[in-house]
Image 1 (cartoon, helix red, strand yellow):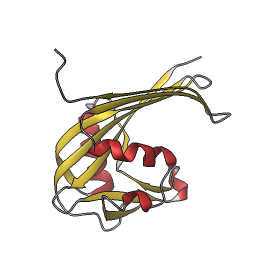
Image 2 (cartoon, one colour):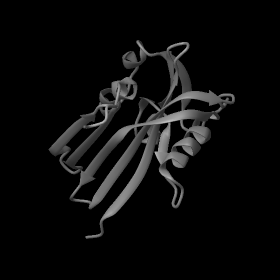
Image 3 (cartoon, one colour):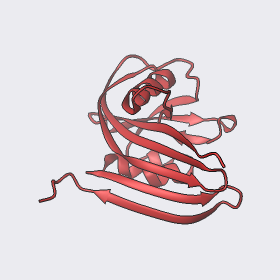
Length: 164
């Protein structure tokens, strides 16, 4: 069996001054309906952070600045020999204007406190608070796409302090 790895990014854009985040409402035909942060596949041979910046620009029209790595979500499906690695970032500064007709779905600035009231995939709702917590995280899930069963899940949170 061929083993494939797909590298993806997700970048939460956080307007700290107004306590808002930018989300997009992806329609059903895009695979993951509901509100989600911008992101997508990293093109070879670009760096992962360059992929995150490019995806935000393509999907929103904004150029993100002050981008911080928040963590890794990894999903493996042994039946397909497929590993998805999603590198998560938060950007607290940006330039530009929002696209009037974004390609991935309607863009919406929403207050941080109301964001989880929007319709979104369970996996994104679970990940959402991690963008705003101190430190980084790592989550690894082994699942079977055919049955929808999770076979194993590991989750770690790392603090910002240096180990002595």
